[in-house]
Image (cartoon, rainbow, N blue to C red):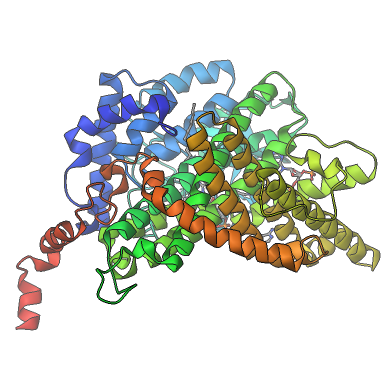
Length: 621
Ligand SMILES: CCCCCCCCCCCCCCCCCCCCCC(=O)SCCNC(=O)CCNC(=O)[C@H](O)C(C)(C)COP(=O)(O)OP(=O)(O)OC[C@H]1O[C@@H](n2cnc3c(N)ncnc32)[C@H](O)[C@@H]1OP(=O)(O)O
Ligand SMILES: Cc1cc2nc3c(=O)[nH]c(=O)nc-3n(C[C@H](O)[C@H](O)[C@H](O)COP(=O)(O)OP(=O)(O)OC[C@H]3O[C@@H](n4cnc5c(N)ncnc54)[C@H](O)[C@@H]3O)c2cc1C
């Protein structure tokens, strides 16, 4: 109950739906079958929402976790991007017009931004929306090959609507990127509307259940009322007005998804992979620890613990950080709605940084879990390949991770520059205004405060150094842009150090808030392990300026190893606490009942290659 709280009733309802848990095995299906099967579940999910009166987004999410285990369905872009963008960027009238239809799934939408030639560089997008005051229409056009829209989820075959990001032109003047609501397909025949060339972009690394698509506009007209007009308006006569001076408001959908990805993608993905690898390591017996004694559970090998327990600690940390990130998003977004935009830069920076930091860590961690499962980890039966291919997409979509770290670094440089000029920082960067101890206070007690302080010191120092290096590069004659590029590796490392500190701090605060002493002690061990592994893996960062000395580093190593034995008795309970149902894990290795071998054998017998098949038979005869 530590994690799921009030969500469990909805999950149980979903688990009663036969169509979700049963059916053909995902691993035995072709891509088209996977896509079709997902669509069947999408339709059933929509029926369930009506039947069980599921309106609240959080309730639906519990249902979705069972209906679409370890995969994104076409509902992802619809409910995660299309509807939020309508709500955030639309005028009251526009919200009234489209949101109810979208929430009842009478229209299905996606978010259409990326193009063949540009994804990262949003200002470089080429699709145009030219206003014609005579017809009171925007004419959408793809002027070049590279301007063809490419990647939007659900665009290929499913969606009949989309929010298209395009450059607004009025009377020859470019007003920059704006969002437009565009009907793409006939609501009767589902055929693409004339003037649109659309389709699926083909097989991908993962995301088989989503039809990521392409879209080319050939002078396609949409009514003036279809530009989302909460912040900017185009009047009938072509007059352009805006309510805000911050053009980045049109990037709001991206901030929202980045904020959600930390928990939904990185936190969930890594927690599932740890559940599978740790449960399996308690079932699997291999080799000898002592002669003539039974083979031990592989989880009893220190090296196995060293592989998995730091990842378990990381899974808890990312999970808690993801929950905190969501809270911050909704808090700052409410402030913005009331007209207080002061914290938007910080929200952009922390969501960009954490999205990048946590999805990279999770992606790396899921792969380590697979390796820790030996040969069976390589089988699709482990469930790990599916978890990996979907989670690792999070490193690229919604802003490529390096680029996101650089956005975070840009904010950190601004704040640090401000501090040098006497400004006081607040929120997640308030430590940049503190006097930070130059000697590490770590002792064998390893209090969470002293561990968090070590990360604070590292982040502050790396931010300071990145800033000073930037200044030196400029002082030696490089222009600001070249200096930035020549410093960008150092900048990404500073951003990572900031996010790492933030994550340790969040974990520490969760531990402090727990009342049950037993739970608190166990979580403290995990938090210590997370921090100690972070210090060990990045030890150069901590000793570079003499902050940590060799004796302390030795203590870190010793404590890390002793924590492995301390955590061992609770390891399986700690993954059980995530409360993933077998349906959600989709893994034979991670089954709750531990009945791995019998089910692996059953599963292999069902594989389509074992079915009589004429051509194979003829070729082999
Ligand atoms: C109640 C519970 C509810 C729960 C709800 C749960 C709901 C469910 C949720 C579902 C979740 C699960 C998901 C699974 C499904 C996923 C499916 C996959 C979806 C994938 C969709 C996509 O993949 S969709 C395309 C995304 N494509 C990008 O992501 C492009 C990146 N590229 C850029 O985003 C820009 O290109 C980039 C780099 C910023 C530069 O932008 P640029 O060039 O315009 O700006 P500059 O760099 O010049 O910066 C100039 C100044 O703007 C500042 N600034 C920049 N951005 C800002 C911003 N956003 N806000 C404020 N400020 C900003 C900056 O900090 C500077 O500030 P300053 O001047 O003060 O330093
Ligand atoms: C699974 C998936 C789903 C997606 N869904 C959608 C969707 O629904 N809607 C949508 O519009 N888009 C979607 N996308 C597109 C996605 O948002 C983009 O692919 C993403 O933003 C990265 O942009 P890019 O492909 O242009 O990468 P690129 O920018 O070409 O990245 C390639 C390399 O260049 C580097 N690079 C680029 N710019 C810089 C820089 N300024 N500084 C340093 N290094 C740089 C990157 O770090 C990276 O190593 C999806 C993508 C995927 C993989």
